[in-house]
Length: 271
Image (spheres, helix red, strand yellow):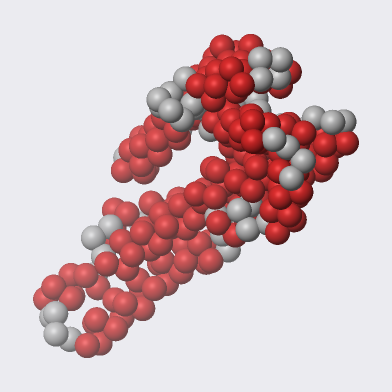
């Protein structure tokens, strides 16, 4: 009735005020649900008003606010998942391998979503790598130790502790040993980033081939080389799984959107 009255007397302020008051009352439960973080209820309540209010700017703004809140919630869940995944990998000492399931790779994904959270975990990973580097040095594995330090510096470039340890270790190594350590670090990072056989000049296979020319008996280099095929398979599986997950998420979003556009009496059979 108010809408009809507004059409008959569009300039009447009393009718306009009454219409806005009714609109605010109708949308109040949706706003309350949104403010309380219950996005599913907010969406359901908003959908219930679609037939009557779907063309109203206030309804459309609330729809956009819910969509924005959902995006933020999904991003937060993704960040929390990556943080948990990183922590599990760190405890399992999967620092840079296997490909598709290592802390370095999780850290790179986290950095794209939350730089501050990634910075905190960068320091944690760098510290763990330095512990391993010192242990390798104590065993007399100087090249492996230096490779761990260089990896720590790639994770946390400004680390004064890693920089000092690198200078100390370099003082004990020949130029060839330093080159071997550098190639080992490059190979480890390439494996963590799934650059197994490509791109040319920046992949694990080439770094390991060059390393083993310089040091044919390097145990870590041979271990990584012998595992390249397995690493490639694991990287392919991880990539396929990630793609399926994105496709499923996209399908669910489109499916939910299509259901919301249906008349309410038709939704049960599609939910």
